[in-house]
Every structure is written in C-alpha cells, then in structure tokens.
Amino acid sequence: MVVDKSFNEVEIITNSRLHFGFLNLKSSKSYSYGGMGLSINKHPTILTVSKASKFESNLNKTLSDKILHFIADNKLSKKIRIDCVDSPQKHIGLGSGTQLILSIEEALSKFYRFKQSINIFKRNYRSGVGVNSYKNGGFIVDAPKNNLQSNEIIFKTSFPKEWKIILIFDSKAKGLHGSSENKFFSTDTTRSLRKKLSDLTLNEIIPSIIYKDFDIFARSLTQFQELNSLFYSSIQKSSYLSHDIAKVIKKISMNFNIAAGQSSWGPTSYMLIDPKNEHYEIISILDNAISMYNNLSYEIVTAKNNGRKLSYK
Image (cartoon, rainbow, N blue to C red):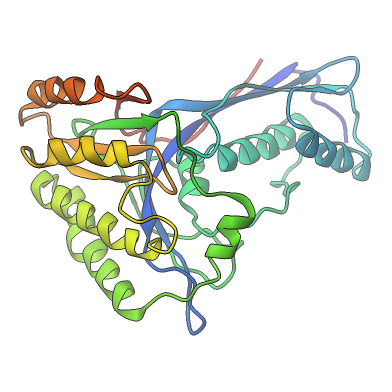
C-alpha cells in the first residue's frame, strides 16, 4: 500500500457538538445510553496529514505511539507529518476528544488510500452524537445500544439556523473525564426517568424542531436537561457544574423564553434564543451579568447542518 502521489496533504475540518443528554444510562435489562445533541459552526478540530522526510507529529505521545504501531503493523511508510492545527479546549463539553480521534483515523485512511475505514484507537462510544455530528452535522438523536461500537441514529434533521445559540464558558471549571467518568457510568438508570426522557424526546422535542415551534422546543429541551441532571446528582449537585453560569442563566430565564442547559459534563452551557423575541435585550442583560465574573465569557453560534469537510492539497 502506497501514498497517493496526486496529493501531498489531507485536511479534515470537523464540527464541535453540544451534548444535550442521554435517553438512558446503563441498563442491565435492555439497551443503554442513547444521546441527543447538535453540531455547531464554531470551535472546529482541524487536522492535517502530509508527506514528510520522517515521522513527525504534534499530537501527544499516547496518540503518536498508537499511530506508529498502526503504521508498522500495516507496513506503511513512516514519512508523514500529522498536525492538529486547531482544536477546542479539552474537557469543557464540546466533544474535542471524539472529533480528534475520528479526524486522525479518517485522514490516515485517506492518505494511505485504504478502501475501508480504520479503527486505530479501538475507542467505544456511549453516545453516538459525536460520531454522527462528525459524519452528518445537524440535530441528532442516537439509538440506545447494547454494543458500544454501535452508533445508529434514531433521528437526524437540519436545525433552524435562525435559532441562535449562546455558549457560556467558565475558565475555572473542567468536566468529569477519564476513569472517574467510566466509574460513574456503571450505574443502572431508574425506569421512570427513562420513560419521561423518551416521552419528551418523541412527543415534544423532535416535533418542535420539525415544525420550528420554538416555544415548545425551549420548554421541553430545558425540562430534558433538568431531568438529565438527576442522573448526575451524586457528582453534580445542580443542573450546572459552574455555579456562576447557573446564576447567569437563571437571571436570563426569569425574564425570557429560552432553552437552557449544560453540554455533556460541562462546564460549557448554552442558551438557545428565538431572534423574533428580544434578542438584543437578552444580550444586553447577559453582558451585564457576565461582567460580574472574571471567569465567564460567552459566544453566539449557530447550528452546523453538515458533517466534516475533507480536502486534498
């Protein structure tokens, strides 16, 4: 197997995603997990694989070593350079780890002209939101599973771009990850919570997106997030990891109809607003509220309704 001579570089630009929560956690009797989320148009992962005189990489040693093992096992040329040009901050709720892994695997597959996808890192995914955000973009509900290598979609659609998304960041907080996260996910879910989450998803959230009914969407997604926070009550004492973010969102939600919640383990949180409402008034109040905290910042983004961008140079 040889490197394609018609190009010198493969570049992949991926989406970040918001993870709105799970339909279910671990179940000993049926299917587990299943997630809901949305691709956004900012904070991409950008990765390149190019020809070089020797193996070079700005990835961490763990990733680089696994790539070198893959190259050796498949008797491939080591004369490549791998660069992560840009990536969201780790462990803040934007799914940077999944996007980086998928980018590396696809870029190497294309660079070495494999006819099938490759699985260098043997990573399993409790939620398929990140995988399907990478492939398709948009609003995604992925199916509960009994095999962590499965990432089937229940529902996928374009998300209204006119519904603006305000991301709120807390520079002092980091979401749960690694072994602590794995230990948490060994817990069985209560059946009553699963039923409520499924009902909200099927009968309110999905139809409200299809019909672009922001009022129902805002109410039902916020409720979905509040129920999801009950999963994490042993670790996170409220709906938000960041108490400062919680105060800001409470101030806005007392006066405006918004959808609000935390992405994944946080601390990044979001407010979705309908621009037909008092858009600029919300921003004015938000500016005032955030100015009281030196650790908080915000950014306005929109949905991204297509998947990763692949290019050859």
